[in-house]
Amino acid sequence: MRLADLIAHLDSWYDPRWAEPWDKVGLVCGDPGQDVRRVLFAVDPVMPVVDEALDYGADLVVVHHPLLLTPVSSVAATGPKGRVLHRLVANGTALFTAHTNADVPADGVNDAIARALDLRDPQVLVPTDGGGLDKVVVFVPAEDAEKVRRALTAAGAGAIGAYDSATFSTPGEGRFRPLEGADPAIGHVGELEMVQEVRVESVYARPLRRQVVEALRAAHPYEEPAFDLVELVDIPGGPVTGSLPPATRGHGRVGTLEAAVTLRELAARVAGAFPPTAHGVRVAGDPDRQVRTVAVGAGSGESLLEEARRSGADVFVTSDLKHHRAGEFLEEGGPALVDIAHWAAEWSWLPVVARKVAEAAAAAGDTVETRVSTLVTDPWTFRA
Image (cartoon, rainbow, N blue to C red; front, side, top):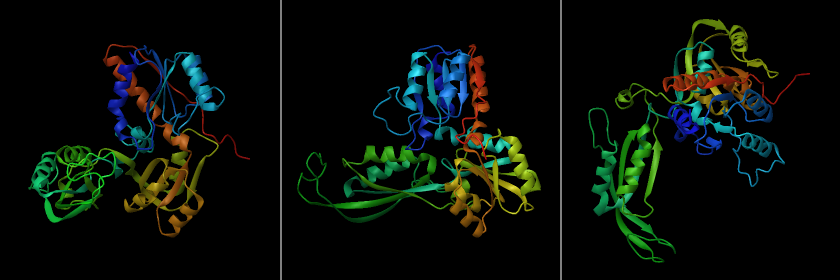
């Protein structure tokens, strides 16, 4: 299979647009036109993984963690990142990263962690599609307000239950001064302008955010339109959010075990579900506490603590929790905490994506061998 075709499959499952703004995902090195016969899957783009890839004869290495997440001014082979890149390029081996874009969808990292623990009916903990409403507020010259309203509603804004085209408008006065280099639709460079404007507000389902903003910009006469986007608090089952489709993409998952177990028993199940590491499984809470509803979070899960609490979970399984925040969370009555190695949790996704690649190649009539690396690349190597 050509590398470009294989990447098209990966991007269809783990769309790069779903990555966080700070993330760096996609093809790191490699010729899109090259053939791929063998693929190695790993969590980290480190030299031991490169060694395994070359011994295996891999044409492509798919990793979860980015090699070049932070900006660099050189990829000389005088540092770890440069040495990895040079060795791959010299041997004609491509490198591809799927990171936060692989965390959020079905068959992604969070789903894989939930499946590893046999959670029943896991739901998205923090949706990035569906499951909520946004409000757009835009300020537009009075004579163009109707044009912008129509553009917003055509993009899907203003739909509330059995109604559509729902907007609210308030007149006011806008002030601005175009600076050197501006090309103002109204006014002159260097002169303060006062314009009769209308504040137009409307709600929309969160998945429509990109197309609503694009429609707003296309219809607005200003070079730099002023607008606000506000995430609204959800009211599950209410007259508005009750009509929205359930979230299928987002951070974390929450589901239930088939039967309640003690926290001690769950910890043993977690230890058996993920590859063993020197980090092991750390647990905070009463070992005899009964738990059934389980929230999970890929990567460093501290940002999901409050969402785990609000979900009604008895226990939150994640990685990289800090001492003070974990202690405060338990003192505030939060769920019990299970902290596993970051590498081990995210490794659970590798067999999923490897299977998807093999099935896609077979469906296309191509033969692509896959291997999931079992090298433990967690940075912590032993405990004294």
